[in-house]
Length: 168
Image (cartoon, rainbow, N blue to C red; front, side, top):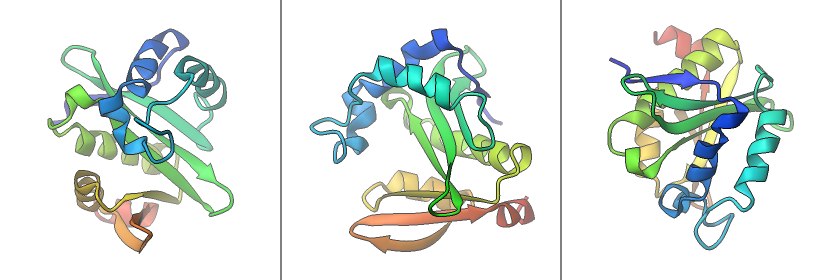
């Protein structure tokens, strides 16, 4: 059973985005791009830009919180956006550090895939991250992503709509 649902946030829900983006434990994976701890500077301003540029822009862009059904608590976020230079949609998923270890990454990824392929009808999802992120790798492979390459310690994975629908 899926304990989570996608929740399209409203502007007043930005407190959770700011909380996640300024939490060093949650954002540690991001440290190479935002030293020293990966936290997003000016997260409140980023939230305003996200609301204006991402929410309600499907299928070009999609952003949602992951919300636990039982109590309505936000536990993470998911997104995808079209990368015109590559001809695919890049995706992302972040689970708030205190909520990790409960299977929410796998559930959230499956919700995102359903939205991307069945609702938005996009052709291909792509993700890439450091090879050291074993949990991320495992949930992507379990969801059907295939490895398309490794370069400089970064693994590339993708899944097409046809592959996803054929497996369901």
